[in-house]
Length: 500
Image (tube, rainbow, N blue to C red; front, side, top):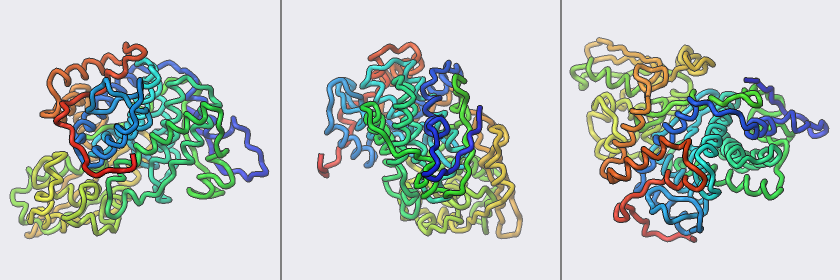
């Protein structure tokens, strides 16, 4: 790996392409490095993971709307849509839009946290859609996905967006563009221009994850993927982009992030070095913000320790800066304490999540978010007693550069009415790669079977699992087999009409 020092240059100083971050990313996307076997197996895990949550969310309103938009853009020999007959094809950018929304809707797929946040699995829908439309092979797709993960993970390590209230999809646009470039075997120059266009068009604010969180939270990464596809298409036709997009005088860094005196250090593999960043990412066992995963495990443990939850006086959670200020009381969002809040808001409220997990000793992607569950009196009482605090020790653990030491946990002190304190802490979620019971292939398959139960026919379920585990051997034109069909009568429609 090489750590690249990135800073802003005035326009009067010509910065050669070879010195620009977008070019360095494009170089590793076009280097045709040997694929790492562990990375290949993890891609297969993540495609299974994405399919699990996408099928489970097929009839949720944002997914229904995105699907109907995509259906209005049919294309012969195009890409497939989750749930829809695989013989029907659609423009790849609209398939990416719909499938990306389905993957993101439940907030239940993979994550990587460092200087910023990310859900690297968001790269997969646009790459599969373009691969299907362009009749690429399984190996082509693997190269693209591994590259996209590499780029997003390393941008997330080096450049913080949330500090400036910029949504993390600003790292997703460039990673999708780089992944597409690798998959399509484009020239470095073309990928370079596409990366810059993709970044330029995907910068948006974090209001999508603040206050009353709406369905746009699910749409945002799908939109970034769609914009990245279009950026690559334009670049392939010879069109350029604002340059240098990272280092320029009026660039993203200069005007939106840390400013003209900023210095960022972004790690990237050497040209020709195998890409392994996907191995640093982790999936979710529970359908909630990743920083709540360890806290759900803590809550389940505390449920066994506390015989009478009704005697709880207060709960204090000591955790990292990110957890406290994003999903804790430090966010100062009254909606996070409101039983009438949307599901999207509740899955970003550690106070709600912890209260429910403590009472139920479990977490369910549907039952834990129902209006009835959120309005349970005993839950509200515990919920209102919870307060979070930043502990510098946990913040330091959160940012530890060593994946084996990096943690997203907390220390919880439960004070009972009689003054007794019950304490539990956990470094990282049990399902984390370095947790008590790391997710393996069998766990991804179990998650898939659980989330798609009563939605998929057994024959279709087994067919998909067999196909995806044979991804390396899929030939040109066979990637439509990665789609999953459900019975037509199980697909809901939105009665409201749009422009399309």
